[in-house]
Image (cartoon, rainbow, N blue to C red; front, side):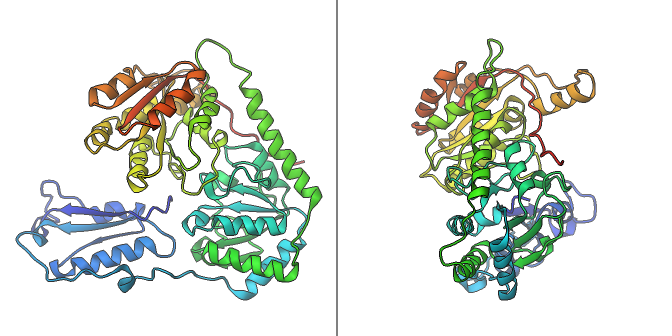
Length: 470
């Protein structure tokens, strides 16, 4: 779901041991088929280079995704290959951008020009195609509001005057209201996923016309009927749409009334987030109090990875992203414990940027041993643990649906800053909001991994309200 072009090389038992219930023998290809774009097994030593080309071509073409390459061990025993490595452009297209159908582009442009309340729903395809500037240019030319699809807050700059906020249960009700008010939605590089739309008409009205753009033909019209479906690269199609709009309206389109609605919704969101900071009750910090302090310390290009869970899930509506490829999350699967692991990967991939991971105490304990990896390889990731002493998402469900009869959700934790120090990392313990920004700046300046524990109160926020359908 995250369209991550990861190629995993897995060793396997010798071919003679397969299908005989041997030690450590599994059907790896069968196991990984449902969760990869491609899973394959090499059947001959000489074909290993060919299969790697196949794997990288699959991972990086069209709708990107992970690939598993399974190599039985007997293909590697005392074997050599006479092979000259090839440049990527020799075995896959590296500069191809699929343009949209010209007639469909023209119909889409006319529909957007004639709309009263158009909205850009900015998906992950914009990030993959490096199309943020192009998408924003289309929005500006058409004077239309901007909402990122769920989990892709960094697809468009959050400080832009046309930006409302992120949709979804963890997002902003104001964004859902903007989607509900829109009469035409340009769904650019998005499959209109469940967390953005709930796959019903509570957010997108039945009469709303949708122009859907996706690199994968299977996604067009899959979740909602479309008025215009365009198969293509988000950057190429955005450029085509911009050209068509400018040919029809050289000065662009002005919609002062709709723009005022967008600005009002954005202001209402800002007021709501400010007001919640005044509702502190008790001696322990509320988790939402931490986010404005994080924002003070984070550089604009800092890479933020958010684990699954409640306290860190508040980041969706409370952290600000203006730079693409700065927001990483669990891509709709809710994989608890991925925060630090993915955070380490972001820092290895972009060592020149700062990187933090946000996780709860439950999620952190899933993969806390990766501190050893961070220390051994000197990866300066700042892992922030919002410690509320429970598996918050599960406890919230038991609170709401089982009359507070809690089973298996309350945790007894160590001091996570002390755990970090035992591993050889730096530890920080911050229990006052006013101390967070300075501590985070100090941690980000280190050339070594660190863990910052922040004790917070249990807080189970309601899902973002859906628009009034009346």
